Length: 136
Image 1 (tube, rainbow, N blue to C red):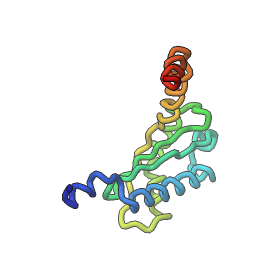
Image 2: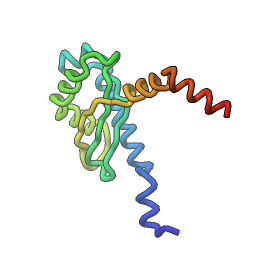
Image 3: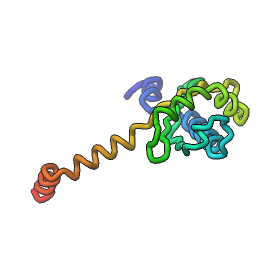
């Protein structure tokens, strides 16, 4: 049996880390949905905050974003990065934490990966192999 210390390390993020990440996601989504950011690009392009991953010490947050319909993704991320200080301050004001988390904005590639996998699975050669596997 593994020692208690090793078991905890393998269990993934704590419930608190997950809860704080979800709270940050909701606050950022609300700020962007209301158009509180004074950036023309961010007010024109609806942005989806798909996930927020917090560091174990809750001082860093990686924010995964996807503009609606994937339009102008690089420009939107650049605009978010330009407004990071203001967004960090806004999130900190709405949360009761000792430290304000530093935000890092990244593009969410999971939708693209899912589409790629779906495309591969629909390929006639792969479908043929999957059909043969299910029969056997």
